[in-house]
Length: 457
Image 1 (cartoon, rainbow, N blue to C red):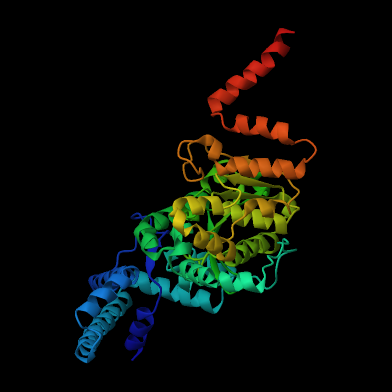
Image 2 (image 1 turned 90 degrees about the vertical axis):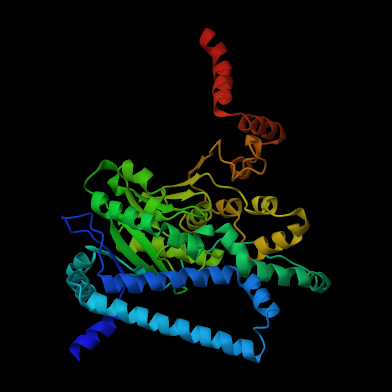
């Protein structure tokens, strides 16, 4: 009976990927034949299910034309689904038997159960030896309140007639945002992409843990999402170690293979995390969930890791600039904000990628559900900002190979005009726009020409 109980527990236990302490190999967990067969069938069905979801309109049309939505057809579909269910049940059982007979997995599973029951320092250290399915990782920090203050956004006022006239567009926008719209903005949330990249994510985590002594944490946001995070502590080891860099990745980025490497190589302490719906993080990357995610990360950094806001730098890459801009407005005492390859407002970029005929729907979808306006957030942050513009970045440009259309230019100009309204006037604006339209080599040449008369004097 004890053996059957262990098999049942192993059936629903987390998948094991690596054992970091295994010095005899690269640490990759090697399942037995039964577990491997079971996992292969389960993973294949997972891929088929996701392909079926994305092609469901086409499949439904084909089934309808072939008469599968009549009584006889429904019976055939029911028999097919029953057969699939039996295959899944057998696959899970094979996996459980294989795991229960594998000493490496049973040792891990006992460690996991002990940590789940009592996550003290010793149990956490023992658990960190393993890389496993993150949904089973214990929550170590719960965010139970909002940050310091939410930025104010002016309400939109519309008459009743305008609302009724625009109702069809709003309905279409809701459908777009909640089906494929958000996934176009955040492709990293697509499960098939994550499945294809899973090997690289596991290898990236191994490098962070083994080479940089990284420690993984699960944070719970105010709205109940679980955020996958990694902390590299370099305090008392390097001069820059007392400064924490919080990294927010791009729309298809993950902390395992993202921008964390830059501050790590500069010997800063680093805290990276995955967007909601990315990697081990749960949820969906709507703006409110993005805000709650980085709010939980900031509160964790301040309350658990004991970093003062004055010693925290926010580093946002691409669309991660929205999260970090919001956090900067929430925590204005931070040391500084770095925005790399980001934009002022996502709307012009979104309209560019879609047919002009759909512009009204795109505009409503963005403003109502995916309103990523970095400039508006930066008006609530008075501290230092470093904007890094990528001159070869085609994603942030509204015209291909046209540097003057890089939305980073718009962000810089808007911010300067907001902070220094008496300096950045129409004439200066024109000069600044012309300067930003030049590539780096021409800018250097222009600066050299400007300084040459002073050198001659």
